Image 1 (tube, rainbow, N blue to C red):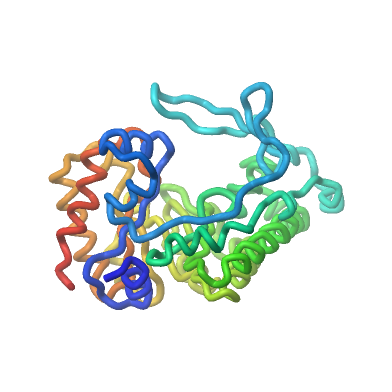
Image 2 (spheres, rainbow, N blue to C red; image 1 turned 135 degrees about the vertical axis):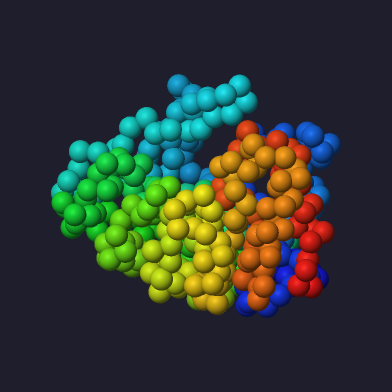
Amino acid sequence: MKPLERVLKSLAHEETDRVPFMYRDVPEVRSRLKKDLLLDSDEELFQYLDIDFRWVGPEYTGPENNLPNGNRKDIWSVEWKYTRFSENAGYWNEVCHPLADVTDPIALEDYHWPSIEEWDFSMVESECDKYSEYAIMTGPGAASPGILQFPVQNLIGVERSFTEPYLNPLFMERLIQKVTEFQCAYIDKMFSSAKGKITFLRLGDDYGTQQGLLFDPETWKRIFMPSLKAMADTAKKYGAHYYQHSCGAIRDLIPALIETGVEVIDPVQVKACGMDPFMLKKDFGHLVTFSGGIDEQDLLPNGTPEVVTLEVRRMIDIMAPGGGYFLGPTHNFQDDCPTENMLAMYDAARSYAPFS
């Protein structure tokens, strides 16, 4: 079975020869895997692991974003600094929030918002043609936009992102509208340039913590649903499917996500409260496809290949019947995940197809 056929059949809730394989990582892990496996390119790695997806997006051609002090400035004019937390890994963190002191929605009109003129979309279709046998997803970064984490929290700060929906809803709603105007124009240009060859629009935000939701469902529907639906509907005009990322305990939000038009929910953070895979499959498995599910908080960094194999088989037994499941980690593979555990995850799923 070809990768695209496998993914679309599972998405349609039909059983396949094996579950489709999703892949997520941080740069340090990808470099290590290629080194350990004696591979030269990302494509060689994806082929080695039998990944069923490929990722595309336009090329950024706007103003230089590398600053003299070693920091970076993103398309929203947010400055970022690299913080190392181990010998081999680190993260980029915001230096400041450029709209931290802005409270008047009218003042947002004067901010320097990004433009799609800062991107070259001319190669998107040819990139899709290279991967015609695969399920093609919008790539990490600007091609897979969000609202809450990127860029609202970057622009106004985390605390205000939680309080403004209640204390200053007009400002929050106008801020999200301004963000959405760019996101929809960008998505429309990307998908029109691809001429219907992109399979999935991936939207990414985190709406849950380890214990529960960041917003009650009704507030979430009022503040975030219109924007997400507008972006998804833009991609669906071109025949694409809507794939939504959200870490955390989001079980109580799943009905609203389905109402928004979500077709795939990622990454099924099984260690979070209420994210029991058996109950998720039972209650929602006929309505949505789940992607992820192999624990990255404890199992992959701390387990053994044998334990990983057993958990992969357990997840397939729960999630694969009737289709509607893509196997992958519950977060990006992190630098503390041993190579042998990541390989064991895919090896176990490749050799275990009880419903084929």
